[in-house]
Length: 460
Image (cartoon, rainbow, N blue to C red; front, side):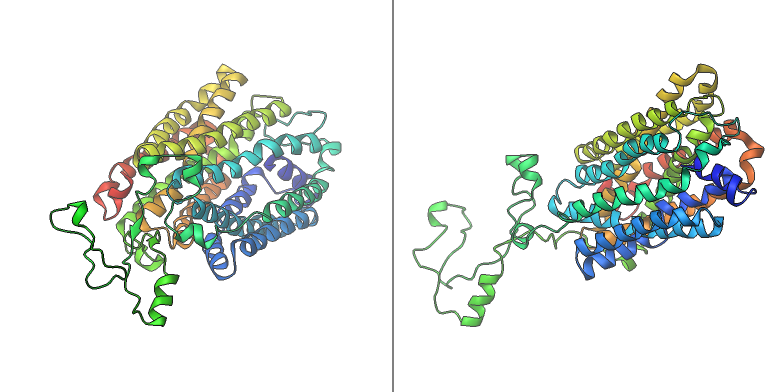
């Protein structure tokens, strides 16, 4: 969408607008400050469905209003399509992933990967739709990445209206099934939904703890010798129990799966932990390279590939690979560790980014290969850090805790937008890719040292 939006505004709204200026919009779309913290608060205060509705309503409204905003000023368009969209997106996303984890708390990596896959897979559907609506004749962009054909540009405002209608219908259907699991499933201790999707008889009751059941004082629960024949007396459980105590014991589950014995840090406690700042720095580096590539791959590709439809289809293929990879990275994390998974992804990302300038000479099929490879590495970012947050700081405050962690993406986005606006023309794409390749490698170094922090051993 960036080349279309920038091209329209240059021709009809503000001639001074460049693609580099537009980088501020996706920066705040994907990481509006405190949006996920707000999402955690609305989800706990009201319900997941109400919280998701608030987020979805903000997103759809912002897209609809963008049809008007893009025709008037960059500042208004930034507020509507950047800030308002980002606020709604953050609220809806953290609600979705938090609710899904509640259904399968023992498969955090896979579940968060599935939700992240849905988040990423949408672009593979909408990128070709956007291109077919705005550029059905596959008209080429200029060498600078702008479109100048009037018949193409006049379709840009109406695109937002059409997308808003599609989004509203899809979100209305999805909101029907957004809910936390029933109380008996969440607190019975008899496992989670994931046990029926990923059966494992040996681990079925691995996370179950037990509470005391009131017995007669003469009943012997266990003997030192461990002889089963002596483990119980013939005495029955006493009936001389106060009525209030009996009701209290009856209402309390024998199984307790709240995991109270595990670490459960509040946001204020988490902010005092060195582990949080290691994750914060690693996510900063990962989100910087991911946002840079995601937002500039098309303008870079169109500097030597004069085929807008190919770019749209290439992005769809890469997005599908990214969605599948998010589930794969989550599964790998559950089978190994967060440290191993993220280290693998960041090392591969450094290689792809460092060699990306070679695709200019190798042609568009090589560009497609590098695009898919980098998108696969990018998939680890969304799937793994929510998993690390839950494992390091607990499940109870995961939405708020992840909201504070995701603030690092806002800072990296601001840095990226500033570099793109003021230095991209000076350094060019070749040096931008080389410089950016340093960021995933820095994330690899940080994560390699995380085991020496207080909660770091929980993700190694």
